Image 1 (cartoon, one colour):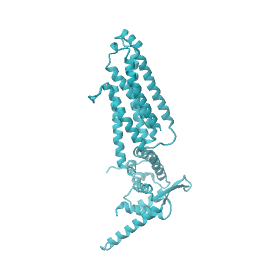
Image 2 (cartoon, chains in turn cyan, orange; image 1 turned 45 degrees about the vertical axis):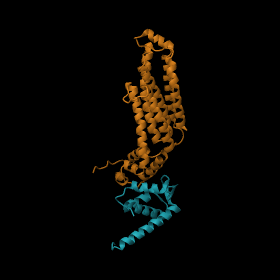
Image 3 (cartoon, rainbow over the protein chains, first blue to last red; image 1 turned 180 degrees about the horizontal axis):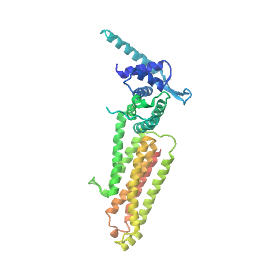
Image 4 (cartoon, each protein chain N blue to C red; image 1 turned 180 degrees about the vertical axis):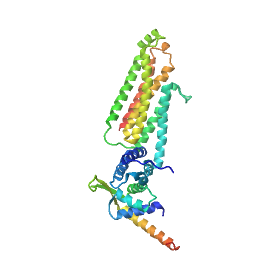
Length: 100
Length: 269
């Protein structure tokens, strides 16, 4: 699994927990992957939308202008499960070498 | 490593908008700008860490770019811009640095138009989009270029008429003001139109593909100007065939103008 796949897995997992607006998605991912710029994460989020894994809608923000909320699609849910399965296999494979 | 210059939120968005409009089709770039506006103007966002967190505006735009399509666009743009550069050079100097053995020099600008029109129309109709209603500035500029082109042709019709050429032969070697005005109109008008065509190309990429109509119409007028100039520079008007030069030139100028007008119509659709 590449770093991009790990980022994608985390991004999809975040959205699986509920619809989120851009800043809410980008901030925790940047905190978890500090060497990755938010623009790269945004590009990934945009790519997921183009692939039909996420969709979006506009909703009122907290007192400010409307915000764009991202939502997981059924295809996104399936992709999350596939990536999650890959991740568990990899983690088990690495653990079998004694890596903690 | 060179430290990135800090930017305010407004500066960042402005630079990002410019970069992304140049790289993405209009609809996609508007979406990306709208998303970045939301991200940048979050109350929690620390302005001093903008570049650190998001990368430079150019890097951010690059991450959204479909590199293959963008490289193809740069190649198309280079070809179209080079054609305009050649026209400016020909109009300004009256000389040509490239030669095509099979063609007379006055057909060179028409060659540029024959390559530029289909290539630009193909690219923009295939890869770019319209964006809202027809821009008012575009309509005004198209009207201005059209009137200038029609005026230039009308002036040429006048100075190439048998009656005026007879008068010119009588006053020769004194050059009448009508000829001096004709030369200035054609040279300066040709250069301004080539520059307007360049602006139309950039605006069509960045905002709305219908700006290509400015490129096609201004290119057509610039081509007409350089076609006339190449003819005039190689023609001794004092001994010109007074009865045939007007007809000779206009039977060539009118089809070129008509092709340009059709191209402009297609670009607006």
